[in-house]
Length: 168
Image (cartoon, rainbow, N blue to C red; front, side, top):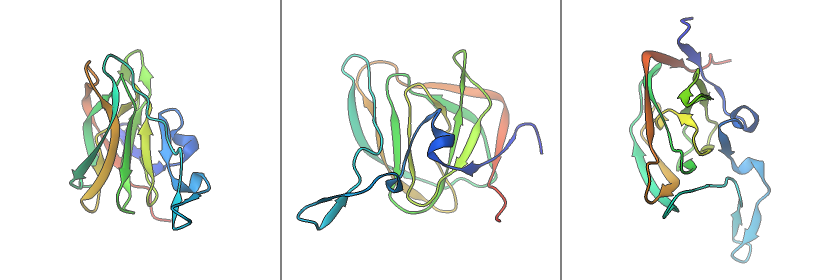
């Protein structure tokens, strides 16, 4: 395998902890609501925001699928707030993250979500773009709105390639 090739691994709370929180209703017991006609999975992630006029905003994204294996050069981060992506279908998607190494992204890591899992990137976490595969996918996005520069992008000199794990 090329030194710039990654194999995505299953997304777990433990493996993703350095980068943020896995949003997964399996992580908590539901609370009944609406006279027992609904179940609420409460406090699955904390969205943090800082800076002048910083506020939490909720949006929707319609994302087109990427071909696999995924080839990428671009990663980004949001220094003033968290960013959460919650899928509106059970389809998996790829999650690419990088540790911060002196203000620059380090070696990428790749994860593939389980059905219905989402992610909440911690403030300042280098990550790839929203990457569904196999089909178009819709997501709820919770992140920061307000004044200030909250987007930093980095282009790697050479592309990285992400492959799905072998079916086993």
